[in-house]
Length: 301
Image (cartoon, rainbow, N blue to C red):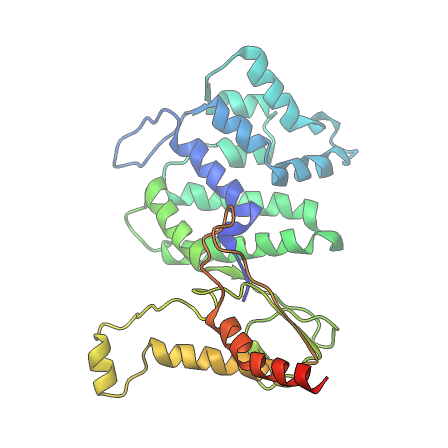
C-alpha cells in the first residue's frame, strides 16, 4: 500500500527539470557529457510555473531580509516574454534570476551526474524551507523520499571513474522512482486506518471499505516472475499464481468475517480515464452466496 512516487507533483517537477536540460541546444563532446547552454523558453516557463516553485516563491516573499527576491520567478517569466526570447543561455537566466541559489540549481549547465546530484541537493534544501510547517507534511515526505533516492545514487556512482551522462542518470533515477512508494502510515489507535489486505491479517473492524474491487486489482493479474514454466512449477509443487490468488482470497474473506458493515467499491468498465476490468470475481461470489439466503429471508417474512 502506498502512493507511487511517479504520481506525486515532485516527480512532475523533476521531469520538467530534465526536460529543460535535454530539449535545448546541446553543445559538448561525448567525453564530457551533454551540455545544455541554451534552454527553450516554453520549457523554462513551464518549470518556473510549477506549484512547488510557486510555493517556495510565496515563502520567499515573506522574507523581509531579502526584498530583492520578492516576485523573482514571476519577474523572470515576464522578462522572457518582454525580450521575446526563444532560446535562453544559462548565463542570461542566472542574470535574470539575480544569482539566486534556486535559479542556479535549476539552470546551471549539467555535464555529468555530479552536477545533477549537486543541483538536486540544493533544490531539496531550498524547497524544504517552504514546507517545514505541520500543514505540509505530505510535501515534506515527497522531498524526503526524493532525497533518499538521490543519496542512494550518489553513493553508487561516487567511486566510478567514468561519470554518467544526463540521459543515463535519468534512466537510473526514473527506475528508482518507479519502485518507490509513499507509505500510508498513521496513528495505530486512530478510528480510521488505511492499509492493504496483507496488513489486515488477524485484525477485525466494525466498518470495512474496500476500494477498486475490479479484476486485475482484486485479485492481482496473473504474472509469473519465475523462469520456470507453469507445468514445471506444478510438477515440483512450487508456488504459482494460483497460490497467490488463494492467499488474496483468504485475506479478503478473513477481513469480512467479523465486520458489521462492509462497503465494496468498484469502477465501472469503460469509465473515462480508467483501465480497470469488470467487477471482481469476489463480488460475484458474494452475490451468488447471498442470493439463497435473501430468498429464504424474504419467504420467512
